[in-house]
Image 1 (tube, rainbow, N blue to C red):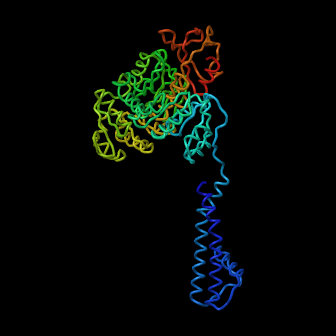
Image 2 (cartoon, helix red, strand yellow):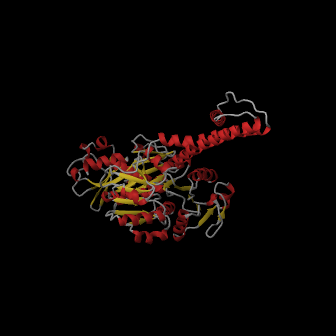
Image 3 (tube, rainbow, N blue to C red):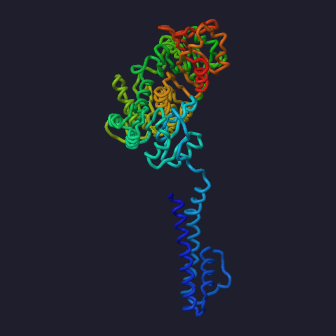
Length: 542
């Protein structure tokens, strides 16, 4: 029985008792103190009128002091009861009666993905599954979170216990189970799944790396540590000793790479249109998007201008992206190559970034609010003196690895004010905040949701894809149905909303696809567009 119903039933039991006791006491005291006998019904009427604060009929005057004190006390008790009953009992009870009931059982489904507990780590995955048409259901113990998921139209089952929850989501017909609770909750849930003889994959997201082996013993097929993966991704974006020479690069397939390349303020292509810059002709790379003032403009046309300090999202071979980097930065490289690194935040993500940078031979200064082993400057990153003490003016890159997006946003503004030329790489918790932090001045921002979502989607959907943003995705797919057809006759953009940006043919990567280019049976095709557009391409031609 829930709390609101329990309170309401207790009120129904106590209130008549209070009224009867008050009526009995009033009748007795009126005879003993006032010398005026009152029958039971008159006393009951008085007690009800007083406790409910509705007023009096004939009972309006008393002479004995004790009688007056009794009546006054009863009046105050009535007022207190009214103000306690309404907010504590009646309102919660009525809210519960009129609000929608949370689903306790999932509708019949097959080959679906069961996600145990919702959070930022699975947010992108849920969007990906919805867009690809893969059924999903979330098991949630938190009532508020369950209601939020209903508002977001995410299928959810509300459950008090793990055993009943797994039984109510048709686990025997699911394709995979994702454990996203605390490590203790995940272990208990996986053991129950094993008892139910679940035949599919169990993918566990763990908080502590040393829990990986116990999770495998508990039944996990694969165990991921999203915070470590995020830390490695941030470190790779920061140092060219860790990543390839183009900062922000991601490998897709054997040949094609996707990179975010900043355009320097003094670059020869800054302010030019794509047609004027002739990037494809000069470098062999293709620009598929541009970050401008924190917003991503996907698949820009020939007349779009390349913004100074904007970021070009480009695809191509390593050599072509290197040539584009040289042009975009006037030969100075994508990021500053001198100076030390500052890592703000010494939690799990910050520690991983620091470890990888130092292992690569980089000089790192660590800032954290609490002093301790591995911390070079103790203090709040939002205080200007702390950044000065860390030498922000001489740093080449600041990695913001704090665990609060509001602090990351504010810190980005402060760093840009003190050191405008410093590259800022930010860890983001909620995917929807990536755009805001880019707009504040961050050169690169990566969320936990993006990292874990790509890992899980690759495992579940068996697709090779890179999601730059909800508006832009690069997907690698086969397209046997296109064999022998020319690009000029397909109308891919009109039919699907995405563009073919490259073709991998054996050991060759072809990025210049003229209207007479013909596809061959063994070609691997890279298409770019929104999630929905790339899925339409895969359905139409894949």
